[in-house]
Image 1 (cartoon, rainbow, N blue to C red):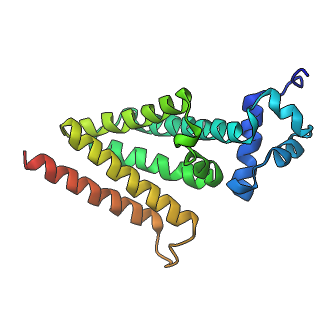
Image 2 (cartoon, one colour):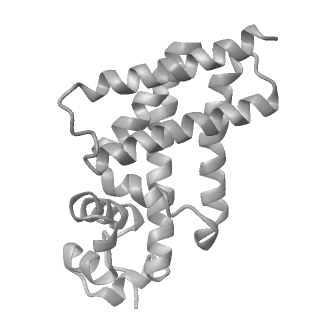
Image 3 (cartoon, helix red, strand yellow):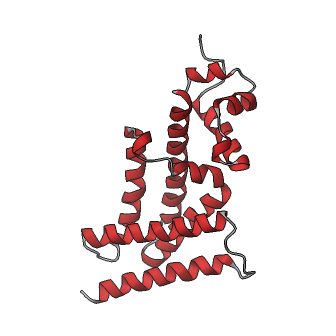
Length: 192
């Protein structure tokens, strides 16, 4: 069976993104995607390797979008300004695409692919390059990168679950949280 004219992986992933952003990651099935695209489910197999292949492709797609946003945010900035910019890009991505953000978390051993490894490495390298401005050694850069990711993921996840119920500006909260992280980076640097 030949692929439907005009249907390609980007169109499929765009439709899948709409589904997961609207109804959550667990609503994505080949049947729901085929219905949205107005095709029969078997037609999807011309483009994706079943549901697990679709999930892997969606994780890659999401990580690529996250990387684009973070790398664009970093352009022309350094040190604290760059860290705040990439952090805001991360949080904005999670807010704009809650389901796609959650789909990026499928990036694990069960979904391994070279493409997934490559985009994950690009994001890590971007964060390490931003943190290199603080003259951290290699090990300190890895620890700091892990710390920043933990802060951003934790904040984004709690926000998605509507866990911040107190009516105080959460944008101020994330800014203060990143400022606190940066104070720790400055302390590490000053102890050298």
